[in-house]
Image (spheres, rainbow, N blue to C red):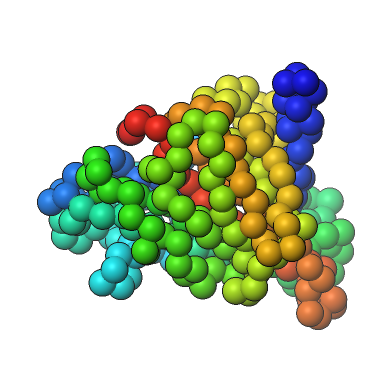
Length: 266
């Protein structure tokens, strides 16, 4: 049974225009320390510098606390590293990433950051939007839900209904998927963890193997079952026809939720 389920999960992946996805990681932080975060854009869980010509696509990472939102500042050896401007207090917060709407079209020569009016011989075009959300529990005892269970307004969003700090390995971690703020039924949510897929996809061009897959119910909810402790990434994508088919074919939205299960911290 386990082998059959695993085989099905390995197949439960989706192909799209871009191998790159957006996710967020935060260092384990104690109250009174500067929060350090990293913007993932590439092969999970590895970080790679973001190409200079794409930096303008990304908004600064944002920290969401009970006091509101604040932009993190890009600081560190690499351009994917960010920090809070001041020390953070104990509590449960979110760090958000956003890849702003960008046209990508493909022709015989490959992909370019253009729409179909700019690339008349395009065989495919999508306007890509990507979102990342990380649950950060500052301090060892933090497991609050007030901030992290509130929607933040991402066009496609995974909203946790509990704090993963309260979830043990093998228990159900319930989330709700929203599209334009409304529950999205029958959406496929996949999840994987750091260490599950050790293949070199940069060379093999294989899609990312998943450790979990299920579809949302009518209310947009699905229960992730994390079978290992560690750093997890849940993903959902949604595509629809672009409003003006002469400009582009698809509007594609990709979103991730990253979180820790168990006591493993970076």
